Image (cartoon, rainbow, N blue to C red; front, top):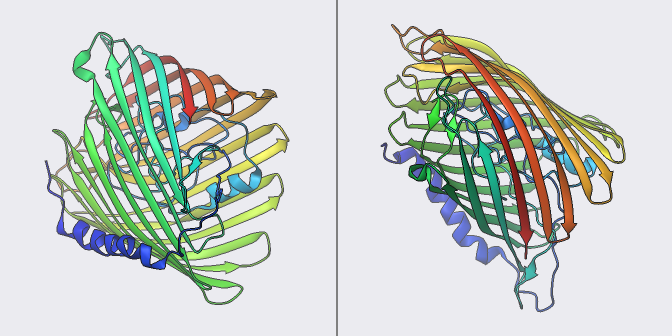
Length: 487
């Protein structure tokens, strides 16, 4: 198990200082009740586990736009996708556009997806769940959002094996508490959420676990300058494709974001972050990253930017890696029904060998009808492997989602995707020839029974055709039902 590196402490220290000083920046508590209610939207943009080769990330309900994101190579960055994330009513396109536009909120990379086991309202890194109810703390600007999820899931291949598959039925109870400070237009805003998922397997009690997800985002806005603090922690236990088995790991994230408006047209962003992934019995890693963007508001609908990224990645039992990226990005709100976000560029990576490769991500959110939402994500990203020493992998894929409101408070979603994952050596003398072809289909209904109660179910088929050294082929079927509650 790796210790938390000094670079992580260097990044976290000023973050904690900013957090501790936030009380100085706040106005005196309001005596009257301040709502600050968040409109319910899809709980998360594509979430996945960075160490997985190509799996359930595409299983998020179609209403959730697969956010195109920057490249992050740490094997485990974000949470596994929830197998039963509710397919809530399709949000407005302005909300979808905001999600699609976000280029780096917490660990925004959507690494090659993982096979999720944690249902409930556990949000991934990069997205704090939005809740519609909540309770204002008397005499303050704080608002609390207690929530809980309970699920029952049958999985015919809990270890992602090719032969001698092991099936089981498990329950998950996921209580949590969200909190916000300040209204949407307040100078200081805080969003936080903690969720614990208690997993209980009927036949394999050794896999029982308590997964955790804690997130905090602090934003302070001045007339021209916006500062952000992002902190995250996850403890996960599910299976993932890179490893080809269930694996327990802890992930720590800390990041500072800043954006300064030069004038009405130009702005500059500067972001610094650190991610630490601690695996049980596998390859630990940590990654430090700094990125800057020059943005230009070309028209009322078009925003473009050019960015430079520098990063350092250390993976246990592998040579240290440094990399640089030159990127272009654009967001275009074509109509009230269509939003497009994309970034593309080249990455130069140095280790024992030098690798030059394209990286890109394109996201589309389209609502052809008032009750229909379509999302598309096309990407090529690079990650380090948590299972194979001295190897990274390049994931290229497409994910498509459809959400259709059937009648009042009832909708259905259909998600499908394909991802090709090609491994390559970052250390001399390593033979790297593994290649995965992952496909999945996921379908299910969703019912908003009451404002505080949502009921969802799903069926999912996934298949990974894998070859080469360290290959992990499997076929998997899952079916489940989940109830989410807000209090």
